Length: 403
Image (cartoon, rainbow, N blue to C red):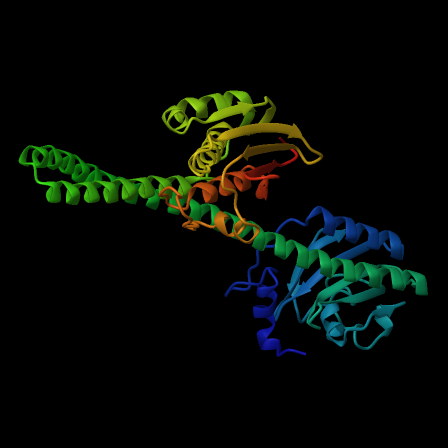
């Protein structure tokens, strides 16, 4: 048993309402599940009134009732508060004959004239008693052993329902906080990106001017320094753009029916220079599916760009994009004949800023695959990396049942 002084704090931790300083309390409307349980209790025991009572340090209030309007009373006046901490059921054929109850205002006529009374404690897993599931009537009555067992089962279901509702509220609060944090992250990343890109662009502009003048001076050392500065600046600018893209993914998903062939056609146009430089070819099937069109285009562009740039030396990249239906929704695959990714690295490379640093690998930020994986998750799916017989990589994007 816990100290009664700590009772309200424990009830608050379980998500149940507790009274304010002036003993007022806001009791939410009963959930459908709690209302169904209290109605079922009335049917099981065959009595006109049933209620789910929560007992605080000073009050009793009802989270669901059947056959009566819910009410609030002091713990001193509560019938259920008399013996609920024992953890055992109380069944009275006539409460007016029991010395523990015959002077209670709900029995002696001041607030009611209850005769039949049954009370089943609501005992949580840790042994804390939340309150009771009770039944009552103005007439005397009895419960069979089977009815009492039924009420005990329902009392356990009430406790489970209260705990599930509390966890659901916690998850909803956590989800709301995650959305708020993501929005702040996107806003922060946007500001930082803007603040970094502007000076970087200015630096690169001045570097380009300096390179032109260094060429006139015919000073190879200065030209080499400027080339290094320009290369580093471009890598930094690329990282800033990639970080912004990664931070803003998933914040505002707008599902719509999209065409895989149309998306890939746009990606090929955007990557035309790289495709020509590497001698790559991109083939694609068509599939109509539901997802955020803008985000899916970013996903496919990242995957196709990786397939092009991580090709094997001397072997033109061949990329095949396919789509199909699955039991869960839609499945997209991007298959290439490039270097491939070892089994040990396939999960690791989906983390932000992870790169493999293999021989002849192009420079990058380590955010392309991480962004693609985040887009898949934001659209209700997941991304997996697998091998291709011979050589290459197969990236599979599973999208959810609404696809």
